[in-house]
Each structure stands twice: as C-alpha cells, then as structure tokens.
Length: 79
Image 1 (spheres, helix red, strand yellow):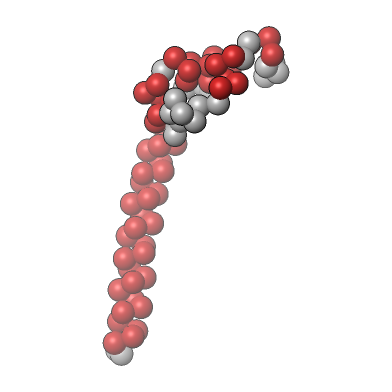
Image 2 (cartoon, one colour):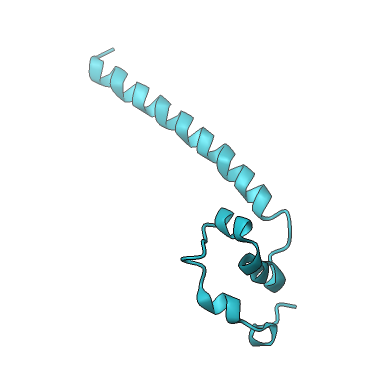
C-alpha cells in the first residue's frame, strides 16, 4: 500500500471515530433536551433559570430581551 493511501485510510478512520463520538454526544443532548415538553412555560422559565438558559446556549447577554417582557396572552396557543 502506498504512503498516500495509508494516510488517506488513517484520516478516514480518524474521521469515523470523531463522527461516532459526536453521534453519542448528540444522542445524549437530544434525550436530555426532549425529556420534558417544550412549551411556553418552559421557554419563559429560561429567564428565571440561568443555568438552563446557559445549557441551551443563551446567556444574560444574548437572551432576547423580548423574552423577559412577554406575556402568555401575547403568545400563540399551541393546543
């Protein structure tokens, strides 16, 4: 086997290993996120739960200001 073919095979194998690890991570995140129903109350709770908001990728700097001023009556009914 040539050196370039060996290198390509090694890179491909490494890529497969990375993809497998990412798949495991995404599966865990998916199960954790969707273990509870996401509804208006869940979204509104992000304002009062900085830990959960941070896990979702929000922080006090980028959590939309409009979210904290929303009233339940302003939101469309989902059921």
